[in-house]
Amino acid sequence: MTNQMDYVELGLACADVCNALKRGLNGKTPNDLNNSVYEAINQLTKRVTSAMHALSTSLTVLST
Image (cartoon, rainbow, N blue to C red; front, side, top):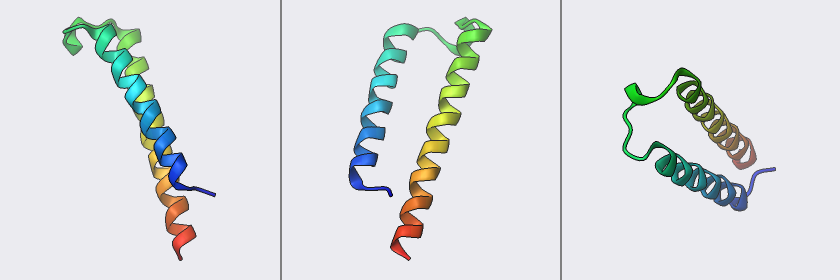
């Protein structure tokens, strides 16, 4: 069951990831990244998007 705390936890996790990426990328452009780093960022993006959709679906089912 999804609750407001799930959204808070997801938001905090995303903020942590964003801060880590900001420190790690340090002004680099996507062209400066090697393929494995670029792929890791893509996988992370997919997982966060998937988690957001799962939370949204659970809330929709809960509200009906």
